[in-house]
Length: 224
Image 1 (cartoon, rainbow, N blue to C red):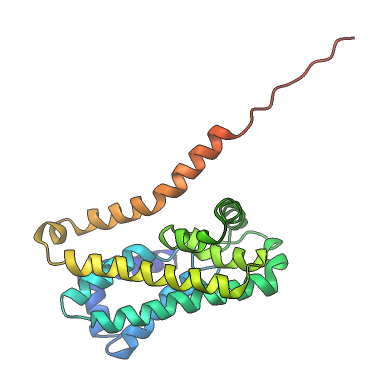
Image 2 (image 1 turned 90 degrees about the vertical axis):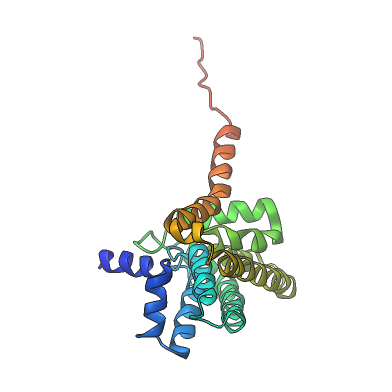
């Protein structure tokens, strides 16, 4: 089961294999529906945090540059998926927030991710909806936390639309423009790893800074 999931994720981030998938099993509008579902699941469902959003979008851009997808159509489809996904996550937070926070850990759900996103939201406010788009895990939980926090929907929607369009467009167009560069195609796996590395850097910096600023407890002794 796990091996099959890992192989599927590799397909999604390898241009030739993704193109083959979209040309056979998911040919035509099925391919667009599959990509819509993946982006929606990562942004709208709390169990989608493991999906390869950034690297997938870059790969989609590469496939579009090779003629396997219409770059205009796929951008529209994925922008809608990202915006609708965040809206669903927000609504889940508004209506089921307390119950989800009390939910025990499972293979596809970690309360730690939710709590860390809440701390990020408390620090950055509504801008978290935009920042989190470019940070794995946080982008899955940020709209949910905004719903729990009671952010007004019109304000959330403005951040949602701006962040969703920016996230999709920046990564797909980067892949579209760089995909035919010989150096990029020759070292594509390294490029994808670089994208993933840059994506998780904000989380790493935040964890390091939190560890450094955490107060050190000192023991006290009492004399008789």
